[in-house]
Image (tube, rainbow, N blue to C red; front, side, top):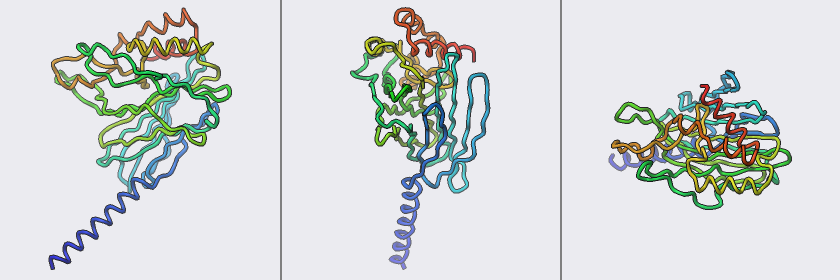
Length: 295
């Protein structure tokens, strides 16, 4: 009898393992955006379904929200925000929130990048923030610029975080992982990662139809400056504004806490640099920050 019970447990275990493997590793792809020669898709476990999007429009933002379900149970949401600035620059924000109790593997894909040229914005390690004031800040510059034809895409990294309430009641984002490296194969830029339960991921890109900088030398100069001056570059952009490293307090949870800080949002570096080296990048960042301050 005991032996039969053990065999039954093993059979159940292996069946559960097979089902879990199928749910997590059999994947399909759903296209979620196609404009200006840029196509975006989410590659997800096959058994996680995306609902039809709920679309809204407010000011310069067009938002599409997809519910994600597994075997009829809600396990999260995928949100895409398309923001069009006054200079016709497009910003795309993507957020996935895992509201369930199991992790799942995802890939946010950018297609139509066959033969694209890539320029890294992290050619060397970045300088550290003052760790006595801010503690560690593992975030890095955006991944870099992908150029194909007349289109250039500045691709931000993927930030995996969870909501956290500090002892004083402040709501912050605790950074758990930054995914700064992606693969580009057969014209598809793949941002692969695992999203733990009760966490969210956020990433962004800026799309333009002309070069971000007038010369490669001007772009190199900004990259060097941003790596040496960590507070000049805003790495973690969201539709609500940039998330930046919070100053340390006696609360140990501020070690990896990020929030929205008006002082950093009203960043003067872009204005100063645009006066010295006018560029579509600086102009777009200024317009986007003005948009954030009006929210």
